[in-house]
Image (cartoon, rainbow over all chains, first blue to last red; front, side, top):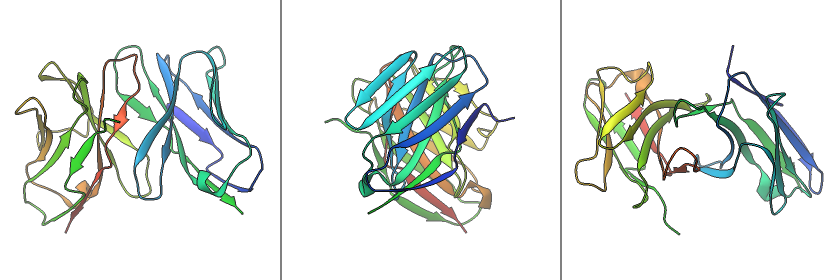
Length: 109
Length: 113
């Protein structure tokens, strides 16, 4: 069983729509990370959170430690948001990231 | 803004050859990582490095792999005898510590023929 599961695997939205990506994990963690992978392959860190909620621009990330679940929301989606969004966790015992399989998001104009 | 850099961006090599992938982490960072992503698959952890030694490595990181920080700025990943299955995108990352986010380099695409 994968330690980090994401859903959906693929998502298509119309410009302006609200998007939610979900992440569930099965191990104890020190932090959960949301990352964005561009079509060219580069990976950018969006959020690192261990409790509650964080917001940056149109992106919101939430985490429920008790339920071992996190969501990434994109409000007023735009075609430039098209990318693969990856959930990853770091565990208390070390710094390495364990990655989910990613959610491919396509926002159509 | 400081960034992690990696060279080369693309390396093509023949099976059995040695390759060295190079990374320059952000200068005040203390923890360094290598990850890889086989085409169409998720990103996988290879190795972490702190205080001039390996702090953790995965099952993938066998005797064919080694890492080095030769001069205080570069962080290298060496594959001694490449196999076809080593073809992947290799990402270097660094951070200031376990409570900080990791910054990724742009990746090196390794193609083994």
